[in-house]
Image: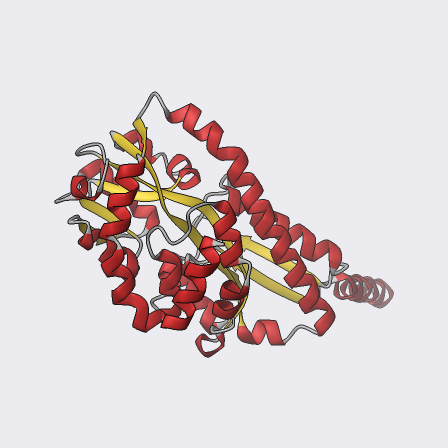
Length: 329
């Protein structure tokens, strides 16, 4: 190659490089979660990405890593603390292993319906809890969620806590949930979300609890005989960022991320509500589905009181009482 041709080639490469640099994002963040891409919260994560990238004029780029590509919920929390991941939506049940106040949201029958859920998660209680994550090297932004959890199993229909006696139930790696099933007389086992189908299929566990979107996306109904629509707990996710990643953003971009998190939160709830009726219709012929009666619900609530007393010192009496009051409206 001649000197002239080489100079022209180098000039072209330099020009292209400068053009690429000029259009590159100022901030590139990894957003990891364990959910399959068809679930409401995975779709909401995409909505969040779109909002951030559009409203930051391309200054922020979000790379989503779904379906446990970077590990389970606990691993994602740890990597977010270290800054290897920048954004996450871990279940508060798992996050409670790092911050005891998060035990609050997995107390059974704390939130009776969607209105109670919004009053607690979006109000003073949710804001206060998100504000406690600083010492965990996390910045809490909003409370997302996947709907209310329901129980499935292969042993018998669940009409009240006594029906759970002896059943091997898979749960999150969450002390509140493990204690709850022990109080009901079940044999709970913590197991990673992506391992549950095989665990049920092979009989390692006999039952599980999840919101309908997760039950459908992971096809748990294929390896379960009975489902009771207990709605015993709202499956809450804490939308968080690595603290240093958050602090690296100027105030205008922090506002963009905050606003987009609220858009994502509301989208997840909208998608969840749209999906649940469809899911029940689609799986009703493959698993026996029943509603929890008023009597059964009352029996569960009575059997749950010891859980509130066990976790009151960890959550704090003040925060628990605020949540109970907000839930009742």
